[in-house]
Image (tube, rainbow, N blue to C red; front, side, top):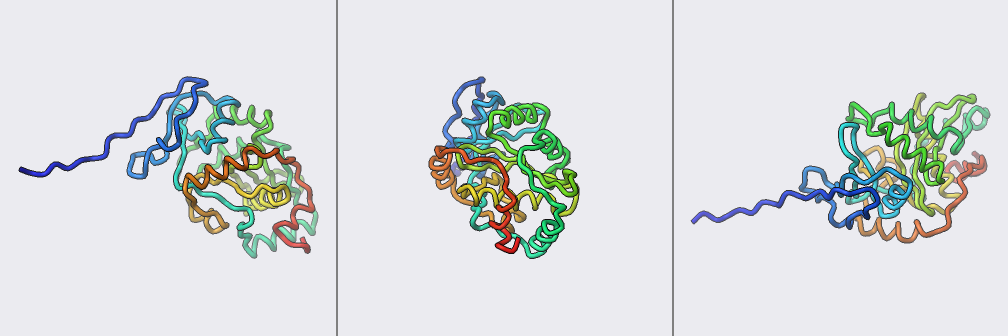
Length: 256
């Protein structure tokens, strides 16, 4: 008789009602599934739900024609701020702009402008954006609650690039970036790292693995190791989100 061949069971996707707790991240779809890391659908994009999600390493990511989708990717790409790699060319450019006093790094002065600019800057390989109007509205509310922040590159008093991130305790989760001039988003990331180093925030979550992130010092770690980091860092007292120009020396050295 021919031997039977077993095939992996089709993964089940839980549907959440608003306010319902997330399932265990161990139930996220595995690597061989159609959508590795997919954990659940439904729920709500409110401050309580988003804060609970990030505290457990879960993040929303979906298109305008989809329901809310929640993810817990494994392995998890993280940037240890101590390992951040600043290229020689960007270091030179930052020093020149700071010396000329044309560059200013601001935090939270234009959050909605930043997230909307990010929405118009699709990720590589994507034709559209995952930052829908519902997402913008939700993250503006999260910003107003003190858990979402914009890091902004201003040159000659003009906003030219930046990023937004989520923070719970002393854990930082990078979300999206935009750049209207060369290297402006990288300057914002360097500024974020400088800020994190100044305030004992050792890890920036990057969610997805990309060669670009790896070139700047990011590395994939197992989900269990990532969640151990969250247990420690999300329970710590939140840092001040105010950028001091002296913080640049944390990435440029004393001659910044």
